[in-house]
Amino acid sequence: QVQLVESGGGLAQPGGSLRLSCTASGSSLESYAIGWFRQAPGKEREIVISISSLDGYIYYAEAVKGRFTVARDNAKNMVFLQMTSLKSEDTAVYYCAASPRRGWGLVERFYDYWGQGTQVTVSS
Image (cartoon, rainbow, N blue to C red):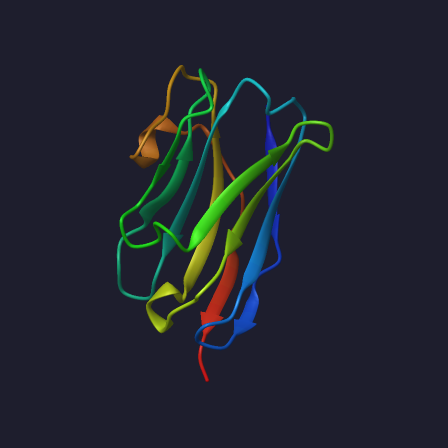
């Protein structure tokens, strides 16, 4: 079993930055595929980033490409989502997810473990 806890959400101004953290316990994330999802009010949860469990390939959703980056710290069993040039449409609850499956995934059912989410609000 893997437990995931997100942190780092909050209020940011348009154009600002935030860094979200995902801390894992119960198992090392090193061999897991990692996903960051978000869900805006009234919308379905959508993929933001997926990191492959095989080769470290990183998929970025078109909406965040060039603005968001992701990094893993295997020693601390953490994953970070660095968000820059934030826009109001980035406002959402952000979720970290992990999957023991090979490869990477864009859909929720690929992931077995989820954090509780952290709220990101982008507003002036």
